[in-house]
Image 1 (cartoon, rainbow, N blue to C red):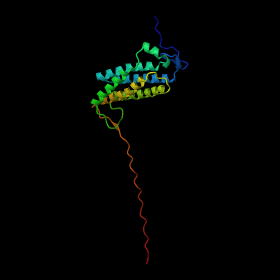
Image 2 (cartoon, rainbow, N blue to C red):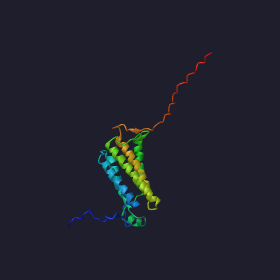
Image 3 (cartoon, rainbow, N blue to C red):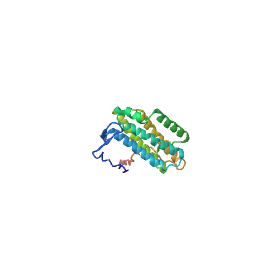
Length: 207
């Protein structure tokens, strides 16, 4: 049996096919949204490859799987949502509740610095912070869909919003006690010193 090539050439004119909903431009808001989610999946994969903690490794692997579900939702036209529900899993409150519970557990274990964290404490933490920022970008794209009336399931946005918080906490857990996290400090403006002026010499009055 001849192998089927991944090269389809169907996108040579700048279009792509939604999961349900026909073909759209590759710059369509839905394409931008699920494309950003795809980037987040890959960024988290790079982070997972650096992580040795079994629990955190398992959490990230599960999240990557859940993001495929998010992507399927975003790649479906709102008018075709019933077809998605018949054939695929959709994002439910259980997804979000599980992440909130994991965030709460990490908050009990980790003392967060009282300033902005500068990414790069360890390779794994740095990779997670990249995944976090890509997830934030995906969230912004999803907000755009919601504002345009193209997001059928509002739980998708809630889930992705919580997810970036979870990834932040996982990054801090990866840093742990191995390094002291560098933190950004707020710049404090000091008032400018007054310019010193020489006193004007008094003229002697001759009597």
